[in-house]
Image 1 (tube, helix red, strand yellow):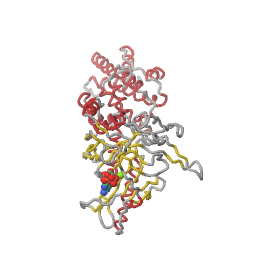
Image 2 (cartoon, rainbow, N blue to C red):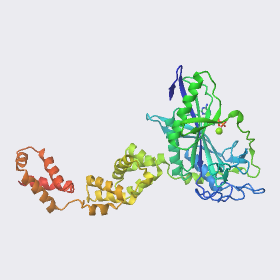
Image 3 (cartoon, rainbow, N blue to C red):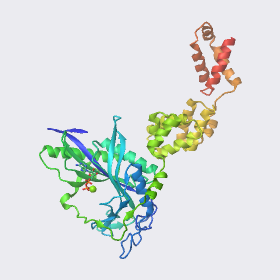
Image 4 (cartoon, protein in one colour):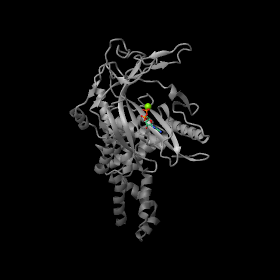
Length: 484
Ligand code: ADP
Ligand code: MG
């Protein structure tokens, strides 16, 4: 993205540090629960509280999940890695340090492809993924004179995914975050819930004169936890930097926070004020040595990734690229589709999910997760079409009613008397009625105006309130008109 300043054109450069909470029931170095939303300090073991003499024990499951994430982004899994202590004093960290990995991370050199808004593909390189523990939470809004501490999150397992500064616009960042979240959900590594803080993003932003080779000074915006704010924060920050540079002022390398009410980034700490973390290998923990077997076992059990699923939908089900993309862009949607595609024609299922279901969800502003329609009921609806019990047109009305009460489609069809009419006698009755009340048109048809066939079909559909089986109407009508 190019920002037009008063004197120059500026190019935007962004690199991301993304924290994702690992789907582990217990913490990284203790067996306390990681469950969200429990009472304050209900999930704190002696290890989490940093009682003297307590020793951490590495949770193997977390190592497995970090490796899984690495494999899913085509990265190198390092068979040797080390946990380091990052020392800083803050009330939410009872140990006085955070256990992280600085010098030898468990994963390095990955990549992921995104599709830009203009359809172009772009590869984002991932510098590293390391494992670390989360900190606790200071609560400032319960009392005017006291701060409370909740240690439930202390020691919750995270991975930090660090990209190279490859992004040039906020929309690329959004694409990447969405795709990454989708992959992490597919492989069951992180629930990707931004609202609960299971995924948060620090965006590093700098600008440079268009054509410059050297990067500008970067500013880090911490803890962005919604796509909307990521976008706004980056744009605000980039424009702030352009204004400063055009006034011949320097950019200070610092950490800023995005104030969602003001829509501005605010300085949190300058580089000179930054902590000296005095990293060193944690003496209480062994180095991680990972065998090729351990990695291969994870690799062989990796679930199907979104890109592979997409390819399979296109090749096996003959879906359009667009439909395949829509259906695989979210794990829950793909699961919904596959339940249905087992029972009805996958192409029909894809059409109805992408066009009719998503059309209605978008219009009503309902998220897929919150929709009232179960896969069972949606499947039944499509079976009714396949079995010629209702027409596609009536099925759309039934779907509208399902949105209101999520009754089963069968109940709705029964209650509103929408069952398709296929019986020859009944259809014949409608046809006779139409032909008898349009003798002129019948004459014209007989004298060669064959286009009128469509008119007769239309009339039959109309008086049957859309319920007559169109194929049967066609057949019987053809016979009738020939025998007149
Ligand atoms: P540090 O270790 O000091 O945090 P890194 O070089 O590891 O620094 O970079 C941290 C993050 O900042 C990475 O996501 C990287 O892509 C990003 N980054 C580095 N330089 C720039 C820059 N000039 N503009 C924007 N982002 C940058
Ligand atoms: Mg950093």
